[in-house]
Length: 75
Image 1: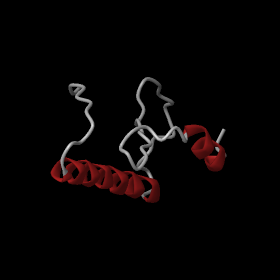
Image 2 (image 1 turned 120 degrees about the vertical axis):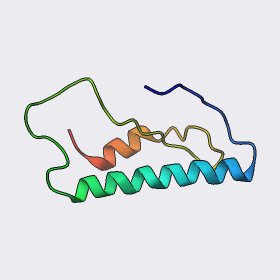
Image 3 (image 1 turned 90 degrees about the vertical axis):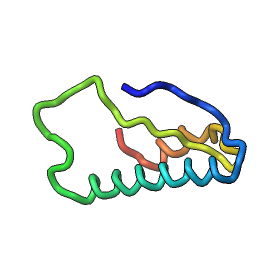
């Protein structure tokens, strides 16, 4: 487990670094979704999940999680 370091970016370089990491993570998730066998079907496991942070233009939480879940329409 890593350490939790939460902060708002203060410089353009910090914003660029965050965006680069976000894009890398999204690219990895996209590859996993497109590649058969990247997710186990069995055995069913619990206790681990990928966390997703939805942010707005001000780099603060966007508070749009319910809208995203409704659009995903996945029970």
